[in-house]
Amino acid sequence: AQTVTQSQPEMSVQEAETVTLSCTYDTSESNYYLFWYKQPPSRQMILVIRQEAYKQQNATENRFSVNFQKAAKSFSLKISDSQLGDTAMYFCAFTQGAQKLVFGQGTRLTINP
Amino acid sequence: NAGVTQTPKFQVLKTGQSMTLQCAQDMNHEYMSWYRQDPGMGLRLIHYSVGAGITDQGEVPNGYNVSRSTTEDFPLRLLSAAPSQTSVYFCASSYFMVGYGYTFGSGTRLTVV
Image (tube, rainbow over all chains, first blue to last red; front, side):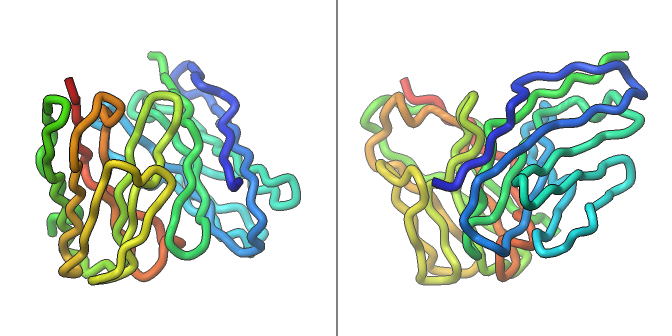
């Protein structure tokens, strides 16, 4: 079965600190895409960052960056200079075939003032 | 530019009742999907569609029915509601393939009593 594991159910850091969320996945496919989605208390699912598995360069979006280790099937998210608005549930996901996304269980991140 | 619109946002049903969750997108996306979100389980795929007239089952299809008569609309029908279907439901769409990332609706919180 193709799965995603987020080993940290909850994390809490102080504002302005750097935090890293872990994600490992299992797939037999050689070409796929990886994502981090953010779900704030509003419930809206927001795409944070996207990585193409065939690209070695790690994706970056402003304060958000990933550490993609394809051989280890690891895809961690680093949030630099964390802000109160980063408080949310974060989901790691990858594509299964062309039509499906497989999601992890989520990590609840709290940024404290 | 509305994106993905889901209605209703909240619903309470009695066991055995049926209802339809509506989903519409105005981005001319070919791919549309329904997910359910339960605590500790992330998002799980119920049904998906790769274009008008084409649907397929996801990971947890039992008790749900879908159809795709137009590119814009992808309703989800609960045939006979059960308490196990209490969940938050998300509709999502993607242009051509999921590797581009899904755009999600705002979700429907459904409670079955």
